[in-house]
Image 1 (cartoon, rainbow, N blue to C red):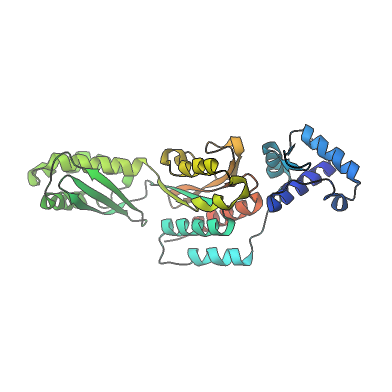
Image 2 (cartoon, one colour):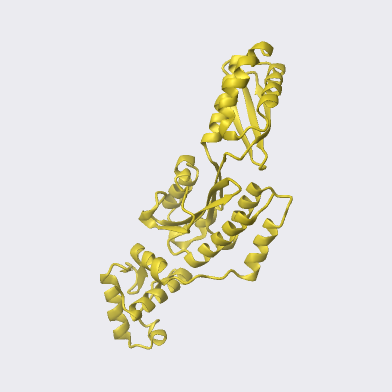
Amino acid sequence: MLTERQEQLLKLIVEDYIKTVKPVSSNALCDIMKCSSATVRNEMAALEDFGLLQKTHTSSGRVPSDKGYRYYVDNIMEAKELTGEDVLKLQTIFKNNSLVLSDAIVRSMEIVSELTNYTAVVLGSASANNRVVRIEAIPTSPNNMTAIVITDKGHVENRNVVLEENVSQSEVKQAVDIINRLIVGTPLSEVSKALEFEVKPIIGKYVKQHEALYNAFYNAFSDFTGRPDIKVSGQAKLLGEPEFNDVAKIRSILNKFEDSDLIRQVRCNDEGINVYIGSENMLDEDVSIIKTHYVNNGVEGTIALIGPKRMEYGRAEALLNYIKDNIGRRVD
């Protein structure tokens, strides 16, 4: 348990380091703490013994450790209020009725990435209430096509599909027409069942190459419903942060942003704001992740920010809370 003075000192060091990225010395804190340099040094040494601060190789000053950031976030950090400029930029998105919800979420997180210089992640998920409005198929070669699904929530998915045999464009069109007649209005979670019990028994009567087409659409829909939509923006923002000046390190992190399976692990099912610092997250021990779960009329997903461990946690939390609240109030 820290004393009041130790908590004040840790707060000053964390917030100064967040702004300057420079180790904090005792001399810089004497006037603010109204203590002698010796007293501040003793308290800094105590915080170091607790594992909340650490020395660097290049300076006599101290920087926060992962444990120090954790203590700061859990016990000291104060809620931040968004600036009028921040609110105005985000309100413009959520008041734009021409944007469907999924686009508003992605665009708002892109703006947050620009405001913070952190990487933004949106993990959407198809819900039971997402119903199929239309499917389309665009042949790209005799045995390849792009399958497109559009839902009533404005969600659009597309997948490149490899057919088991060469199929003519007319056969593809005929299969699409049959599937559209039978599954439009069906919840995404029930499409595979509809394909099995409604489409499969009759498609063979009208489409010669029905087996190849049926298997292609069945696999595409299974992929749509089983994999969340992933949008990552601002991946290169970390390049501008001084702690990521090692080429091999930044290349490693950027490669991880391209790993869809790894990014899916950012998913959050907790409605609160969750902060994972350094080794607490599965992505990389040199970054922090702050994330939360959103819900709107059965549509749900995760919004997250990824940045350096010295990220402005209070501001990041305020931005995610604002977006989450607006998602919940949005009526399309």
